[in-house]
Structure formats: structure tokens, C-alpha cells
Length: 104
View (cartoon, rainbow, N blue to C red):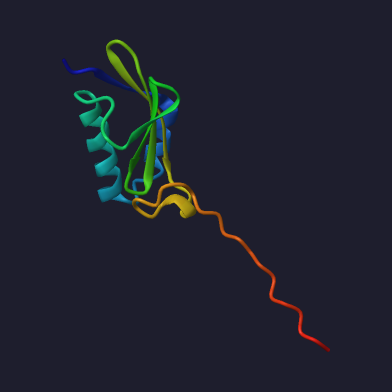
């Protein structure tokens, strides 16, 4: 049984900000369409509860909620630069280490 996909207005506005990346936003929309038949695909992770989930699609992240008959798309965002490398796992912060002082 396929679930219905609903988009929060905020998620639609967020997706519109990425129209300068047609292949990327197409990949996001295709992944969202597939959630109707597989709401917990490999690579999706619970986000605070089993029915609130996060899915990585290329450089984008989708936050969605599963109910009995609906997938509600809550948030679509580009990953922070530290997290955008495919398969990078956790975000890797940039660490600044000062150069040693020169004697003098």
C-alpha cells in the first residue's frame, strides 16, 4: 500500500531555493516519491522518534514524518559543507590550529 505524500509549505519554499540545481532537486523529489512505497529506506535514520526520519540525498537532507497513511515532508535543506561529501558520516568540523610562534 502506498502512502500519500504531503509537503509542508516551508519544505516547498526550501526546495524552491535549490532550483539552480535541477539534477539535485530532481534526485530529491524522486527519493521523496519512493518514500510512498518504502517510508524507511536504507540510509534513512530516526530523528528523535521512529516516525520522524532524516534522509540524505546527495548534498540534500530531507526531514519527514510517517503517519498511518501519510508521509509529511517537513524540511528540505542543503547539507552543511562539512557534511556534504557523499558517505562522509558525521559532520567534520574545521579545526584551526595556530602556527607555532617563531623565536625572536
